[in-house]
Length: 89
Figure 1 (cartoon, rainbow, N blue to C red):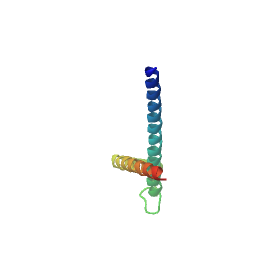
Figure 2 (tube, rainbow, N blue to C red):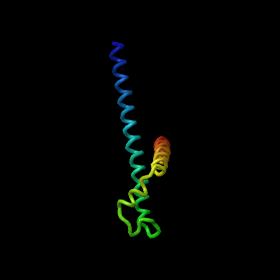
Figure 3 (spheres, rainbow, N blue to C red):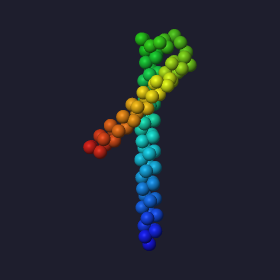
Figure 4 (tube, rainbow, N blue to C red):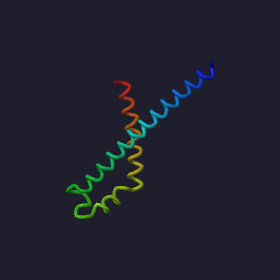
């Protein structure tokens, strides 16, 4: 009987963990998508460098290691802020 109870509790905890992990992955992925789409729109603005150049050039210009690090840090910070606000509200 105790083994069944432990098995049931373990399965609930692992499902909660997987659901929480997937939610975090989706939310951070969406924040990264918004970050890169904003960078791409900025390239074709009046002051952007891609004005008159190809989409391939603009994509090469925004997908850099520095921008990836900034996007990941911003996504993680944004995720924790949203989780904090979700618990308050």
